[in-house]
Amino acid sequence: MLTNVFFTLIFSFSIAASIVGLLFCSIIFFVIISYHPCHTATNLLLLNTCVAIIIFYISTIIGSVLGFDEDWTLNQPAGIFNAYCFLASCSLICCSYMLQAINRLCCTVFFKHKHLVTIQVTWYLIALYWIMGLLFAIEPLFFKNGFIYERESRLCVRNAKVVSISIFSTFVGFGIPLNLSILIYATIWYRVLQSSRRVGSVIAENANYNMPKARCQMKLVRNMIIVIGSFAGGDSLALVLVLWHAIKINRPLPEPLYLISKPDITVCVILMIITLFFMNTQVKNAAFVYLKCNIRHIYPVTITMKGIASC
Image (cartoon, rainbow, N blue to C red; front, side, top):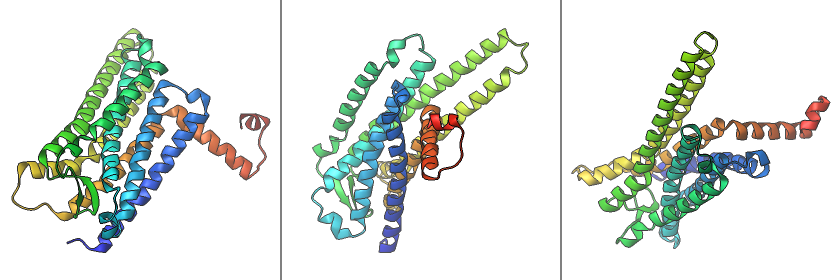
């Protein structure tokens, strides 16, 4: 039986991590909405991801606050709704990243088809994505005890002990988006290598040409590994729970694993949104410029007329 101190530490950490995640999402949201040059299809998909993450963190904070005392969660009539929001937001985050991968595929591989990356097409994809994501999370409601109060984690969650629900939600909400994203980025990386070799054979006499391209490719690989790693790590412990009950191992599962699997998702989502923020040069630079200009207004210093005009 887990002690109250352990629950307090885990839920406090989840709340603190959620606040950090909400801060980054708010920065991205504000920059994209207020800065007109950021009104592109790629940034619209990033904004869509931020909305899903905001829902996820709000649900996490509510569940963590109620989890400080066991009676609070047991006597909370909206526990099933919060569990639905948590499940829906998790699947929406995974699918939103898959949409961003598809957008990058259209920009790099199918760049001749300009209509695939227009704002209108992007809005259609986002609308379809929200409809499917919200309908997907309804599935546990059609099963008895689909959403239950989990004593081991003091949360109202999807019943991991019902194998059919767990396998379906994990495969559809996590497995398919992850594998498609890996396949898409592998295709992009392969085409980038082909393109660089083709260009390199034409201008091989230029010795300084290959180094910038190599650095650019290494940066692309690094960003892919970080995002896919955080993507895959987010549901790894939850996958262990599903497989444990699916295989029907006689030994009981360690109780802390039920609770730790929730902040594991929270931390991985933070890593994902931070990586996406720094990968998006336009949004990152706009945020830093806005912050720099506000610091100058709060703490006046002698600056050039060019700096004043830019602020």
